[in-house]
Length: 65
Image (tube, rainbow, N blue to C red; front, side, top):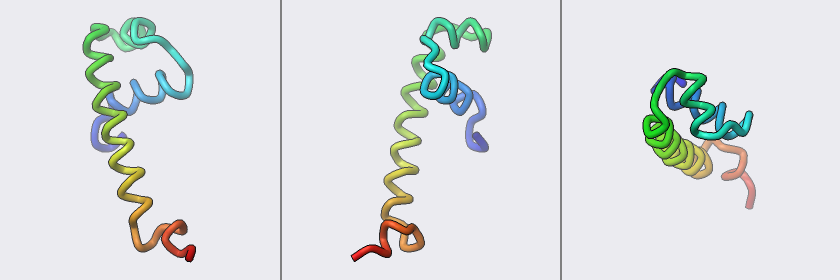
């Protein structure tokens, strides 16, 4: 959310609430294509963050044998 509040909002509305791209676009006052673009970017960024965290030396997963 600190990096891009709109991406975060789209991700929350899509993933946690289950809204369609059209519903998100209407709620945020943007076009549906903008929602598609932000959702695509948010998915990639979330994957990068999860992947980065799973390889972090301070993560609990790395402490397991």
